[in-house]
Length: 284
Image (cartoon, rainbow, N blue to C red; front, side, top):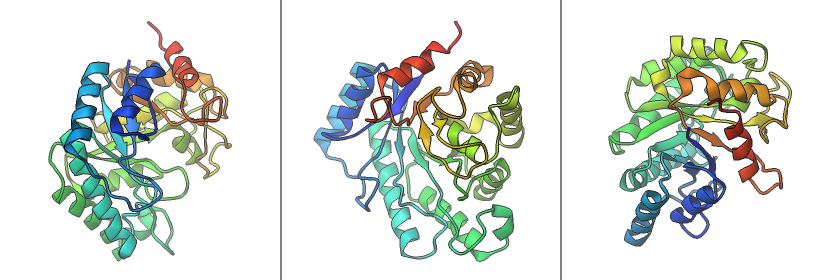
């Protein structure tokens, strides 16, 4: 079973590998640079060597980048251009490090309804698709562009939206990251009996389980269908432990890595207690 966390790259990418191993994780998610500024990913030969050697030594695999929070591929102006440059830099670094790809919040359409079907004939939707295609054209073929589902009324709230984007981009390098908290916030009641199984059936039917690259296992601080996507520690939120028991034991997910992005029981981010709780739910 692959369980890891999103951890800090302070001191270098390889330090995050050491941090996740120290809390019992065997896979990892990191930022390629500060997520709160347009600091594009850069790599030196020494940092490349240290990362590859540490990754092999600690057997941490897979590793994912998470794109900057500033990225908005629905924007046709300066932000859209910076978003593309950021992702191109990030995916080029990912290729050199053997990192799977980048997990990306697509952003929003300014001054437009957030639902894809409301704007699908609008030029703003064309901007989104063209921006994604430009990133894919200018990045290595051995990296994935991983769309994360939205929980806060932005692009990618529903499976139908995501399916439409996949069809219009039409590139095998596009994959999906599902976040349990975001699903709950966006109106998928995965908490009710049979809810998770029903959702996965719908996902497999509309998108295909082969497109699922990773799952963010996060509890929620907010009520169902709230449109707020604040994460909570595993079992301490409005989703509860039973949802995660279903998630980690579902046969369709046996090869899917789980990444936690929880606040931590000590308030310092993803921790060993969260990983231990999630691991304990796996049936032998």
